[in-house]
Length: 316
Image (cartoon, rainbow, N blue to C red; front, side, top):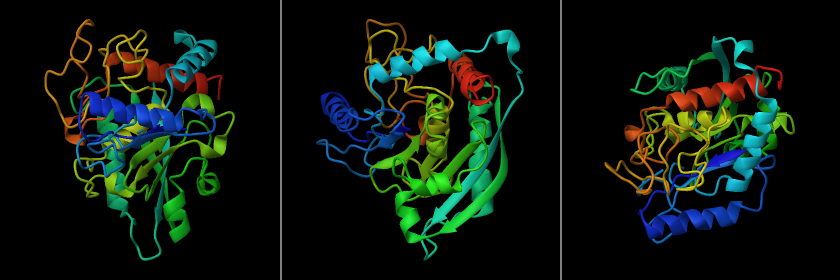
């Protein structure tokens, strides 16, 4: 699973060190075994709540979600399974099942209205409603399940969670979105499309219940943790994958970026020898929710490639 950890703290050498530390913690696992999380790094490199500064994964410091070597292997598998353009149906509706997992005292329970607002955020983000490209993906809420269990509330967000496998519905084309308590260091996790065949029960996206619209997680409660994680679920890497080195995030129209962004910096350029300033407003960065507003046309094409190869095409 691809995890999203947001590094929320300082930029520069301190943030790079935080990302390196996360990479060291996660680097020994394979994507088929793990998820991509969003973690948070505080000033000084200590794990902390993502509200200190930045955002796999907490969009704080997703830094070590997958290695560059693993990204290259995912790319190899995509090239192997890619479906010809002419074989595609441009109507891409993703069924969504939301699993609301809460504590027995009601902590983490979400109303149906909140769940629908989260799906609305996905539709607006993937439809270009915040200012980016219309990716061609639409999300249709099919069902909401509810589980009130203290143990599940704390464990659903863990990698390889048995509870997720027990709740999951549908096939590779169905987005199973789980809300639960991921603690202070992780905002969300996601599997990648290439992992579905090996472990269907783990497939899906998990977000901390406080990251949904109005959820109360400072700087990260507009619902874009789910947007970011769903980008992973559809095959996207972080905009800072591979840093300033080719091939970057494997998308031609996102600028190279040495390390994840925190907050909402303007004019940031961590790869001055490459064209363009850092894509701090891209949904696949670690910026604050309020800063994130776009997918690019290249990212839309890449998500379509993964959709037809692994979720709705011959690979499914």
